[in-house]
Amino acid sequence: MVSALLALPDPDANDLAALDAAWEDEQVTFGPGASDGCKDGLIAHVRGAMRPAPNLPISRPVPPRH
Image 1 (cartoon, rainbow, N blue to C red):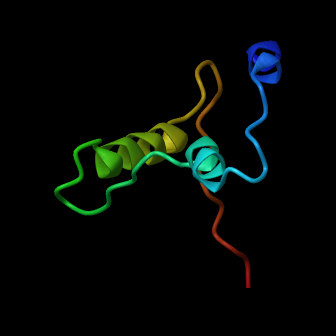
Image 2: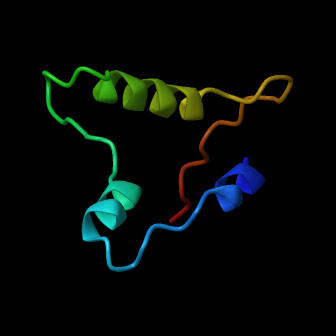
C-alpha cells in the first residue's frame, strides 16, 4: 500500500486545485441523522471495551478503605 502511494506523482506545488484535491478529507456527518451510523459505531466500541476479556476471571472493583 505504501509503495503504491509513493509511486504516485506529487501534485505541482503551484497547482492549488490539485493540492486541495490531494488533501481533501471525506465528509463527516454528526447528529441523529448521520447516515454512517456514527453513534451506533461508537456505542458498539464502548460496549466492546467494557466486556471482560475471554478466559480471564472477572475482577470486581474494590471499595476504597478509609
